[in-house]
Image 1 (cartoon, rainbow, N blue to C red):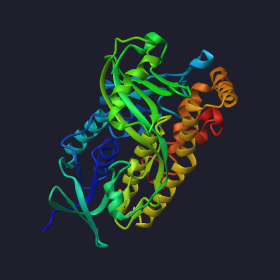
Image 2 (tube, rainbow, N blue to C red):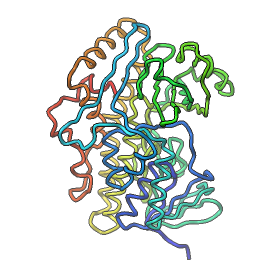
Image 3 (cartoon, rainbow, N blue to C red):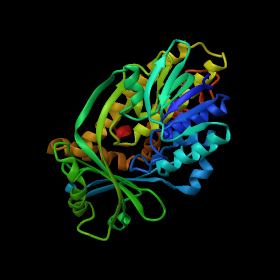
Image 4 (cartoon, rainbow, N blue to C red):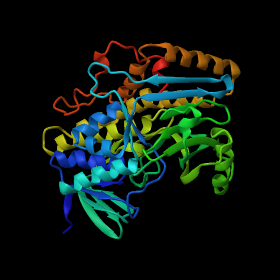
Length: 413
């Protein structure tokens, strides 16, 4: 007879491991299946907003991650065409315990969360690629690595190309952008060229998101290229782009690079029988503004909270349908519009619109409340946490702060 756990999670990325840890702290038995041989260190999201720091602190991870990463309070917007550079500094806001962002690699967040989860009995199995799932109405049997595993519930945290979502027959609604993003990790002193620790570069040809990753000079430079260009030549084209971003300097060292397609998509449902979705498997957005990881993590921990209540008999399974509806609403009404607007602004080609964007950015730069706006917008991804007894019920202070974050200025970041 198969050893049955309460929950199987597929995917050992930050969302999968934070979800596993949240469930384990709630008393659930959890097994994590990951197809890769270890936690992958690929160029992906690296900035955690104050809304996500709430989670890291509640789970007991923040202090450890602060030792690994570093804090940042500045955000730069650069429009070279107009010779304009703005810097917004985050400001303390009543009701929000943090006035900074954490910069840390998502592989470090996943690893630290895994170590804490394993201490609570979570089993993490690498080299276990899922090939089949079967929901019999009482639970789910998952085939991975040539073995069958049994659980009452299955959560797919296995990315935008989720195998779990495909095997469950859940449509990934939305669209894929015609451009390709290339995320690069590079050692180069960007600050010597006037960059802040986190930056937007607005340019119709050379748009970019540039951010410092660690204290040793490693930076992330993510830019966009036409997806019709041959994929196998993307590494050669990096040097052509760097010529512009680094103003002709050659003293850089490329550490890693990763091309990927951009999506604005969400599952038609995040719950089908005993199969649930979180992270990019549930909803995937372009990375402009950093809302993909933020919303993905919140979807995972909210799911862990309500599923834990279901496992303890405190809530009916119907709350999982409410979870699905609410997290889809947050994605389509908050995350996707903001990320889409940021992407448009970064690559806008119409000169009149670019001048209007400049006026908006200049107004934000001159607004004494801009530092609060910078932090508060990410709180909108929390949405309705669904359960009155939740540890997250008081996590969203945005309705208690007298600052309007519904307008265009709140979408800058």
